[in-house]
Length: 227
Image (tube, rainbow, N blue to C red; front, side, top):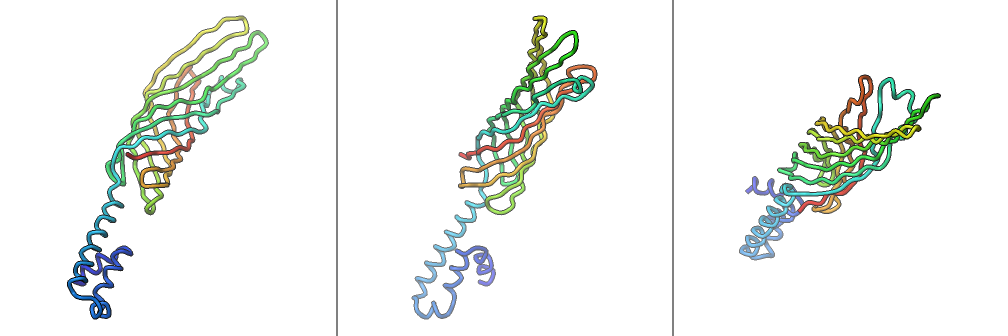
């Protein structure tokens, strides 16, 4: 009987059930009603606990925020650049339990613009990056509503470079590459089905010349809905 009391005492509902055993209540209420009340409380408490621990299922969501494509190398020192803008992504996946899940996403980063001016010519390029990714999601619950997130996976990214010179010459460059996806963030549940998510993701580097690389990332905020 003491073991049952300790187990039910884990939440408020269990504490109310324990009161049934107090002598003052037993004196006023017939014993059969006490047993019936105890069984109802135990059933309700079990259902409540199951609702808290059962955190698996399909979900989907969308996020938007600041994305960047940063150029590094010798050529980067000569460029006038606009490397940040608004990017977005849509994602979906399956959460196996409260500690991890598997997620896929489509990513669209903002266009980065670069200008190079020299005495003999000038050069302008628009760089766009998009892709799809799959990653594992590690979840660290910090209470019933707040969790920290960690991500590790792979992204198939497409870099599109449309350039032109002042003399009228222009062209386009395309390259697709599989790169690592690393991310971290936090999530807060507004309701059992709807959550607010903020996260940072890094999508690796493209090598576009012998000594020039483009790295990309995004800091976003969005919503997640669990079915």
